Image (tube, rainbow, N blue to C red; front, side):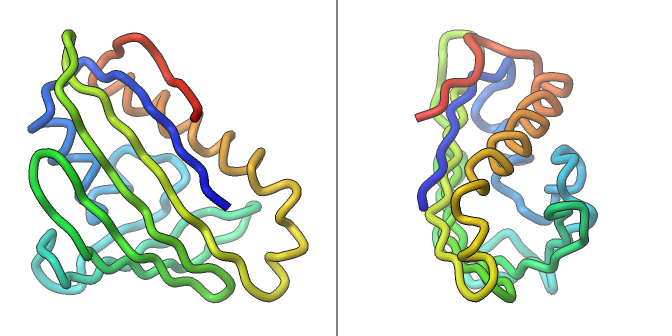
Length: 148
């Protein structure tokens, strides 16, 4: 299952990338994140970040490993959780009024989460709307979100 989102932000690429691509800072802006912290250092390739998200009303631990990091343009993570793995990509491009942020996740479900496959796109979409709203409060907006 692949989910993606594009949004224009009223911040330059360097500022937007510094916040959004640093998963150790997820809890600063994503309301679906309870906590996020690098195990050591970070963000550098090979660094591991422990994140606790709210998933269907319950806390869920996700471990992210940074596998690609080219500031201020791209960061790619491999996520591992009990019943899910994913590859999450953050791309930031310049835009006329700031930057264009593209987020994507290629999600692979296992075990009982396979039963939720039909409803997960709606769960992810709701979470994405909340995250975009938080980013807009922080940075201002451009043309708005576009799902792809």
